[in-house]
Every structure is written in structure tokens, then in C-alpha cells.
Image (tube, rainbow, N blue to C red; front, side, top):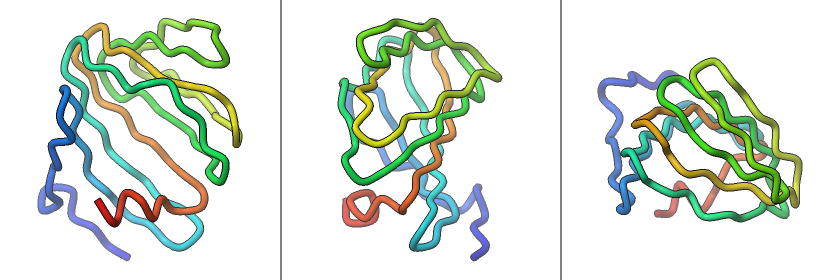
Amino acid sequence: MYKDFNKIELKNLGNGLKRKILAYSDNLMTVYMEFDEGAIADTHSHDVHEQITYIIDGEFEFTINEEKYLCKAGDSMHFAKNISHGCKCIKKGKLLDTFTPKREDFLNN
């Protein structure tokens, strides 16, 4: 599957969050995210999905299992199933999230 980044809709999710769904298969999905300064991704966990997050740009405070980490461009994290995680954007930023399996809920929203 080929996806031209510049032709993919940047969906406004509200509260300072935007998303582009990049290439995916049944078992893997890549998602580009933009965060405005101060935007928050509420703490949550996935009972089906594993996730890797790579910070492209900006600065974020991630909370992972109640521990806080200040993360910047070039940093990455792995979230196994059922790991509690969320973040607050400290400086406007961009993330690349990879999920396995694909997020059906993202395709339907």
C-alpha cells in the first residue's frame, strides 16, 4: 500500500490533536499525530494493541504506569498491551505512532 503523505487528510480530533492515518495492513498501522502546545492525550491503555511512539518534533511529558518522562525529538517508547500511558505536549510537536494490530477504531472515526 502506498500513501502520499501530502494527500492524506489531517483530521482535527479537537483539543489540539490532529491525526493522519498512514500505511497499514491487518497486522500493522502507522499514524502521524500533531499536538498543539498544552494538548493532552488522556491516560489510557490498550487491551489488544501494542504501540511504539517516536517523537519527530517538540517536547512531551509522558506518563507511563504513573512514572513521568520528559521526551523530545528522537526519543521513542514501547507500550505493551495493558500499559497505562498518556502525555501532555510541552512544546508543539509531532509523533509517529505504530500499532499492532491495526486500529479499526481509527478507521471508523
